Length: 145
Ligand SMILES: *[C@@H]1O[C@H](CO)[C@@H](O)[C@H](O)[C@H]1NC(C)=O
Image 1: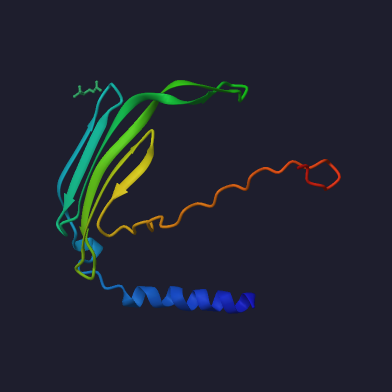
Image 2 (image 1 turned 180 degrees about the horizontal axis):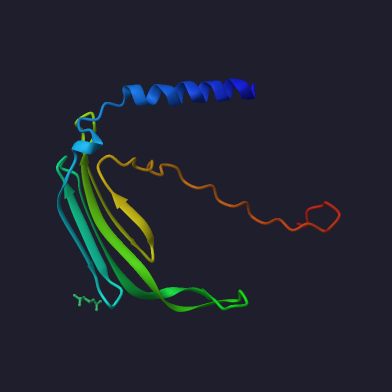
């Protein structure tokens, strides 16, 4: 059975490269613009654009937030910390000529990507059941009324 899965995986892995036909060979793609700026206060930003129309830009800023720090003994304590936040966007065209735009922010509430191609979580359409009413027992399996 294990051998079957290994063989199936290898068959799929071998099939992928032959169906992938990029419009540009990697060697043909050139960087058309580029920037990179690092600041003493911990913020930074960088970007690039390529001849295949791919672009990417990101910026980072340090922000005071609440979190856990650990001392050299491994003891954690909750309080104010400096954390990195990040936001940016990227645009690219797939080998099937599909255009993608991804934007994101990452901060104290997590990574928040946005893009029309991203899957959307199903809408919650049912009511949660109510927890049963607690009926006290006498310790011997009998209900106390
Ligand atoms: C950090 O430094 C840069 C460059 O000096 C400045 O543009 C930016 O406003 C500063 N950011 C903060 C949060 O102080």
